[in-house]
Figure: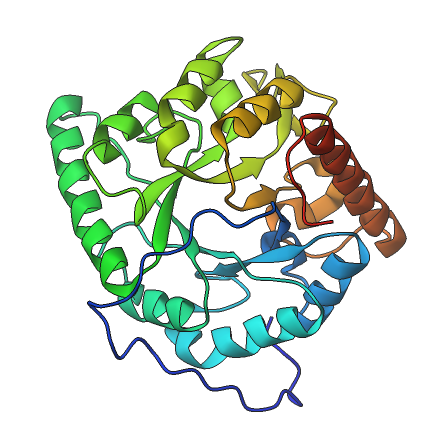
Length: 317
Protein backbone atom coordinates (compact mmCIF):
# COMPACT_ATOMS: atom_id res chain seq x y z
CA UNK A 1 0.00 0.00 0.00
CA UNK A 2 3.02 2.26 0.26
CA UNK A 3 5.01 4.31 -2.17
CA UNK A 4 6.90 2.64 -5.05
CA UNK A 5 10.50 1.76 -4.26
CA UNK A 6 11.99 4.70 -6.17
CA UNK A 7 10.76 7.23 -3.59
CA UNK A 8 13.55 9.53 -2.49
CA UNK A 9 14.59 10.10 1.13
CA UNK A 10 12.31 12.18 3.29
CA UNK A 11 13.25 13.37 6.75
CA UNK A 12 11.37 15.29 9.40
CA UNK A 13 12.46 16.58 12.79
CA UNK A 14 10.09 14.99 15.30
CA UNK A 15 8.75 17.42 17.94
CA UNK A 16 11.95 17.93 19.89
CA UNK A 17 10.30 20.85 21.67
CA UNK A 18 7.33 18.84 22.90
CA UNK A 19 5.52 20.77 25.60
CA UNK A 20 6.12 24.11 23.83
CA UNK A 21 4.33 23.33 20.55
CA UNK A 22 2.03 26.06 19.28
CA UNK A 23 -1.71 25.32 19.11
CA UNK A 24 -3.00 24.16 15.73
CA UNK A 25 -4.44 26.87 13.51
CA UNK A 26 -8.14 26.01 13.38
CA UNK A 27 -9.24 28.73 10.94
CA UNK A 28 -7.70 28.51 7.46
CA UNK A 29 -9.01 31.07 5.00
CA UNK A 30 -10.80 28.56 2.75
CA UNK A 31 -12.32 25.12 3.03
CA UNK A 32 -10.75 22.17 1.25
CA UNK A 33 -12.37 18.92 0.14
CA UNK A 34 -10.42 15.89 1.37
CA UNK A 35 -11.01 12.39 0.05
CA UNK A 36 -10.85 9.52 2.54
CA UNK A 37 -7.93 7.35 1.41
CA UNK A 38 -9.75 4.22 2.63
CA UNK A 39 -11.33 4.05 -0.82
CA UNK A 40 -7.88 3.85 -2.44
CA UNK A 41 -6.48 1.05 -0.27
CA UNK A 42 -6.14 -1.02 -3.47
CA UNK A 43 -3.28 1.18 -4.65
CA UNK A 44 -0.20 3.08 -3.43
CA UNK A 45 0.34 6.66 -2.27
CA UNK A 46 1.36 7.94 -5.70
CA UNK A 47 -1.72 6.73 -7.55
CA UNK A 48 -3.98 7.75 -4.66
CA UNK A 49 -2.66 11.30 -4.88
CA UNK A 50 -2.84 11.40 -8.67
CA UNK A 51 -6.43 10.14 -8.80
CA UNK A 52 -7.52 12.50 -6.01
CA UNK A 53 -6.07 15.44 -7.93
CA UNK A 54 -7.57 14.25 -11.22
CA UNK A 55 -11.07 14.02 -9.74
CA UNK A 56 -11.07 17.50 -8.20
CA UNK A 57 -10.05 17.11 -4.57
CA UNK A 58 -7.94 19.60 -2.65
CA UNK A 59 -6.54 17.18 -0.07
CA UNK A 60 -6.22 13.56 1.04
CA UNK A 61 -7.25 12.23 4.45
CA UNK A 62 -4.62 9.50 4.85
CA UNK A 63 -5.39 6.34 6.81
CA UNK A 64 -2.70 5.80 9.46
CA UNK A 65 -4.00 2.67 11.13
CA UNK A 66 -3.94 -1.11 10.86
CA UNK A 67 -4.49 -2.02 7.21
CA UNK A 68 -4.18 1.62 6.15
CA UNK A 69 -1.95 3.44 3.72
CA UNK A 70 0.50 4.01 6.56
CA UNK A 71 0.89 1.33 9.22
CA UNK A 72 1.17 2.75 12.76
CA UNK A 73 4.35 0.82 13.50
CA UNK A 74 5.99 2.40 10.44
CA UNK A 75 4.61 5.92 10.83
CA UNK A 76 7.96 7.66 11.45
CA UNK A 77 9.41 6.18 8.25
CA UNK A 78 6.38 6.05 5.95
CA UNK A 79 4.16 9.03 6.79
CA UNK A 80 6.77 11.58 5.61
CA UNK A 81 6.98 9.75 2.25
CA UNK A 82 3.20 9.53 1.92
CA UNK A 83 2.69 13.22 2.74
CA UNK A 84 5.49 14.29 0.37
CA UNK A 85 3.87 12.25 -2.41
CA UNK A 86 0.47 13.86 -1.85
CA UNK A 87 1.97 17.35 -1.73
CA UNK A 88 3.97 16.72 -4.89
CA UNK A 89 0.64 16.08 -6.64
CA UNK A 90 -0.48 19.58 -5.59
CA UNK A 91 -2.74 18.45 -2.77
CA UNK A 92 -2.67 18.93 1.00
CA UNK A 93 -2.84 16.64 4.01
CA UNK A 94 -4.85 18.59 6.56
CA UNK A 95 -5.61 15.52 8.65
CA UNK A 96 -5.03 11.80 9.09
CA UNK A 97 -7.41 9.07 10.23
CA UNK A 98 -5.93 6.96 13.01
CA UNK A 99 -6.86 4.04 15.21
CA UNK A 100 -6.10 6.04 18.34
CA UNK A 101 -8.69 5.58 21.09
CA UNK A 102 -6.73 7.01 24.02
CA UNK A 103 -3.15 7.54 25.19
CA UNK A 104 -2.68 3.80 25.69
CA UNK A 105 -3.33 3.01 22.01
CA UNK A 106 -0.25 1.44 20.38
CA UNK A 107 2.07 3.99 18.69
CA UNK A 108 -0.20 6.92 19.67
CA UNK A 109 2.60 9.30 20.65
CA UNK A 110 4.86 8.66 17.67
CA UNK A 111 1.87 9.15 15.33
CA UNK A 112 1.20 12.56 16.87
CA UNK A 113 4.88 13.49 16.90
CA UNK A 114 5.32 12.62 13.23
CA UNK A 115 2.09 14.27 12.09
CA UNK A 116 2.84 17.50 13.94
CA UNK A 117 6.37 17.64 12.55
CA UNK A 118 4.90 17.37 9.05
CA UNK A 119 2.56 20.31 9.66
CA UNK A 120 -0.59 18.19 9.94
CA UNK A 121 -2.99 19.98 12.27
CA UNK A 122 -5.73 17.40 12.82
CA UNK A 123 -6.23 13.69 13.31
CA UNK A 124 -9.29 11.50 13.72
CA UNK A 125 -9.62 9.42 16.88
CA UNK A 126 -12.34 7.77 18.95
CA UNK A 127 -14.63 4.79 19.29
CA UNK A 128 -15.29 4.59 22.99
CA UNK A 129 -17.68 1.67 23.57
CA UNK A 130 -20.33 1.24 26.26
CA UNK A 131 -20.40 -1.98 28.31
CA UNK A 132 -23.99 -3.21 28.75
CA UNK A 133 -23.38 -4.41 32.30
CA UNK A 134 -22.29 -1.04 33.72
CA UNK A 135 -24.14 2.24 34.33
CA UNK A 136 -23.66 4.67 31.47
CA UNK A 137 -23.06 7.58 33.86
CA UNK A 138 -20.06 5.80 35.38
CA UNK A 139 -18.64 5.09 31.94
CA UNK A 140 -19.04 8.71 30.86
CA UNK A 141 -16.87 9.74 33.81
CA UNK A 142 -14.19 7.29 32.69
CA UNK A 143 -14.40 8.42 29.06
CA UNK A 144 -14.02 12.02 30.19
CA UNK A 145 -10.81 11.16 32.06
CA UNK A 146 -9.40 9.30 29.04
CA UNK A 147 -10.27 12.22 26.76
CA UNK A 148 -8.60 14.64 29.18
CA UNK A 149 -5.38 12.62 29.09
CA UNK A 150 -5.45 12.54 25.30
CA UNK A 151 -6.07 16.29 25.15
CA UNK A 152 -2.97 16.81 27.28
CA UNK A 153 -0.91 14.69 24.88
CA UNK A 154 -2.33 16.61 21.91
CA UNK A 155 -1.44 19.89 23.59
CA UNK A 156 2.11 18.66 24.07
CA UNK A 157 2.47 18.26 20.30
CA UNK A 158 0.25 21.14 19.16
CA UNK A 159 -2.23 18.97 17.27
CA UNK A 160 -6.02 18.60 17.49
CA UNK A 161 -7.75 15.22 17.86
CA UNK A 162 -11.27 14.98 16.40
CA UNK A 163 -13.62 12.31 17.77
CA UNK A 164 -15.54 10.73 14.89
CA UNK A 165 -19.29 10.40 15.39
CA UNK A 166 -20.51 7.00 14.23
CA UNK A 167 -24.04 5.68 14.65
CA UNK A 168 -25.06 2.40 16.20
CA UNK A 169 -25.69 0.56 19.44
CA UNK A 170 -22.95 0.67 22.05
CA UNK A 171 -20.96 3.52 20.49
CA UNK A 172 -20.24 6.47 22.75
CA UNK A 173 -20.76 9.62 20.73
CA UNK A 174 -23.49 8.16 18.52
CA UNK A 175 -26.14 10.32 20.19
CA UNK A 176 -23.57 13.17 20.25
CA UNK A 177 -25.06 14.63 23.44
CA UNK A 178 -22.85 12.21 25.37
CA UNK A 179 -19.81 13.31 23.40
CA UNK A 180 -20.55 16.93 24.25
CA UNK A 181 -20.64 15.90 27.92
CA UNK A 182 -17.30 14.08 27.62
CA UNK A 183 -15.52 16.99 25.89
CA UNK A 184 -17.34 19.99 27.35
CA UNK A 185 -14.65 21.03 29.83
CA UNK A 186 -11.60 20.46 27.60
CA UNK A 187 -9.59 22.82 25.40
CA UNK A 188 -11.11 22.42 21.95
CA UNK A 189 -7.99 23.70 20.26
CA UNK A 190 -6.58 20.27 21.06
CA UNK A 191 -9.57 17.95 21.22
CA UNK A 192 -12.95 18.21 19.52
CA UNK A 193 -15.54 16.58 17.29
CA UNK A 194 -15.37 15.12 13.80
CA UNK A 195 -19.06 15.53 12.99
CA UNK A 196 -20.29 12.91 10.50
CA UNK A 197 -23.55 14.40 9.23
CA UNK A 198 -24.65 11.06 7.74
CA UNK A 199 -24.31 9.16 11.00
CA UNK A 200 -25.74 12.14 12.91
CA UNK A 201 -28.86 11.99 10.71
CA UNK A 202 -29.16 8.24 11.28
CA UNK A 203 -29.23 8.88 15.02
CA UNK A 204 -30.95 12.27 14.93
CA UNK A 205 -33.82 11.73 12.51
CA UNK A 206 -35.57 14.79 11.19
CA UNK A 207 -34.49 17.25 13.88
CA UNK A 208 -32.08 15.72 16.37
CA UNK A 209 -29.08 16.25 14.10
CA UNK A 210 -29.87 19.97 13.96
CA UNK A 211 -29.69 20.22 17.74
CA UNK A 212 -26.49 18.18 17.98
CA UNK A 213 -24.83 20.23 15.23
CA UNK A 214 -25.73 23.43 17.09
CA UNK A 215 -24.57 21.95 20.40
CA UNK A 216 -21.18 20.81 19.13
CA UNK A 217 -20.48 23.70 16.74
CA UNK A 218 -17.95 25.31 19.15
CA UNK A 219 -16.00 22.03 19.35
CA UNK A 220 -16.52 20.91 15.73
CA UNK A 221 -13.06 20.63 14.19
CA UNK A 222 -13.83 18.24 11.33
CA UNK A 223 -16.82 17.27 9.18
CA UNK A 224 -17.38 13.98 7.36
CA UNK A 225 -19.82 13.89 4.46
CA UNK A 226 -22.04 10.98 3.42
CA UNK A 227 -25.71 10.21 2.71
CA UNK A 228 -28.13 7.34 3.35
CA UNK A 229 -31.68 6.01 3.15
CA UNK A 230 -33.41 3.60 5.51
CA UNK A 231 -33.94 0.13 4.04
CA UNK A 232 -33.97 -3.53 4.95
CA UNK A 233 -30.75 -5.53 4.95
CA UNK A 234 -30.27 -9.17 3.95
CA UNK A 235 -31.68 -10.26 7.33
CA UNK A 236 -34.84 -8.22 6.82
CA UNK A 237 -33.79 -5.71 9.48
CA UNK A 238 -34.13 -1.96 9.03
CA UNK A 239 -30.68 -0.40 8.61
CA UNK A 240 -29.03 2.62 6.97
CA UNK A 241 -28.39 2.08 3.26
CA UNK A 242 -25.51 4.39 2.31
CA UNK A 243 -25.92 6.14 -1.04
CA UNK A 244 -24.61 8.95 -3.23
CA UNK A 245 -25.01 12.48 -1.81
CA UNK A 246 -28.28 14.15 -2.70
CA UNK A 247 -30.07 10.80 -3.09
CA UNK A 248 -30.71 10.22 0.61
CA UNK A 249 -32.01 11.80 3.78
CA UNK A 250 -29.16 14.13 4.74
CA UNK A 251 -30.17 17.77 4.42
CA UNK A 252 -26.90 19.13 3.04
CA UNK A 253 -28.21 22.63 2.19
CA UNK A 254 -29.36 23.21 5.77
CA UNK A 255 -26.25 21.65 7.30
CA UNK A 256 -23.91 23.70 5.10
CA UNK A 257 -25.88 26.85 5.95
CA UNK A 258 -25.26 26.05 9.63
CA UNK A 259 -21.54 25.61 8.94
CA UNK A 260 -21.49 28.96 7.18
CA UNK A 261 -23.21 30.67 10.10
CA UNK A 262 -20.81 29.13 12.63
CA UNK A 263 -17.71 30.15 10.65
CA UNK A 264 -16.52 26.55 10.30
CA UNK A 265 -13.07 26.20 8.69
CA UNK A 266 -11.91 22.63 9.40
CA UNK A 267 -11.40 19.68 7.04
CA UNK A 268 -14.32 18.49 4.88
CA UNK A 269 -13.93 14.75 4.36
CA UNK A 270 -15.77 13.04 1.50
CA UNK A 271 -16.65 9.39 2.15
CA UNK A 272 -17.78 6.95 -0.58
CA UNK A 273 -19.13 4.23 1.66
CA UNK A 274 -21.88 2.99 -0.65
CA UNK A 275 -22.10 -0.12 -2.89
CA UNK A 276 -21.96 1.77 -6.20
CA UNK A 277 -18.20 2.01 -5.65
CA UNK A 278 -17.84 -1.78 -5.43
CA UNK A 279 -15.49 -3.28 -2.85
CA UNK A 280 -13.54 0.00 -2.69
CA UNK A 281 -16.37 1.47 -0.61
CA UNK A 282 -15.26 -0.70 2.32
CA UNK A 283 -11.52 -0.32 1.70
CA UNK A 284 -11.28 -3.39 -0.53
CA UNK A 285 -10.02 -3.96 -4.04
CA UNK A 286 -11.10 -2.02 -7.12
CA UNK A 287 -13.59 -4.39 -8.75
CA UNK A 288 -15.52 -1.94 -10.92
CA UNK A 289 -14.27 -0.33 -14.11
CA UNK A 290 -11.73 2.36 -13.26
CA UNK A 291 -13.43 4.92 -15.50
CA UNK A 292 -16.70 4.33 -13.60
CA UNK A 293 -14.84 4.70 -10.28
CA UNK A 294 -13.42 8.06 -11.36
CA UNK A 295 -16.78 9.23 -12.72
CA UNK A 296 -18.41 8.52 -9.34
CA UNK A 297 -15.72 10.51 -7.56
CA UNK A 298 -16.12 13.47 -9.92
CA UNK A 299 -19.91 13.40 -9.63
CA UNK A 300 -19.84 13.63 -5.84
CA UNK A 301 -17.18 16.35 -5.86
CA UNK A 302 -19.39 18.39 -8.20
CA UNK A 303 -22.39 17.87 -5.91
CA UNK A 304 -20.53 18.97 -2.79
CA UNK A 305 -18.87 21.97 -4.44
CA UNK A 306 -22.16 23.18 -5.85
CA UNK A 307 -24.02 22.76 -2.56
CA UNK A 308 -21.21 24.35 -0.53
CA UNK A 309 -21.10 27.35 -2.88
CA UNK A 310 -24.87 27.75 -2.63
CA UNK A 311 -24.41 28.03 1.13
CA UNK A 312 -21.75 30.72 0.52
CA UNK A 313 -18.98 28.73 2.16
CA UNK A 314 -15.48 29.78 1.01
CA UNK A 315 -13.85 26.99 -1.02
CA UNK A 316 -10.22 26.62 -2.01
CA UNK A 317 -11.13 26.12 -5.68
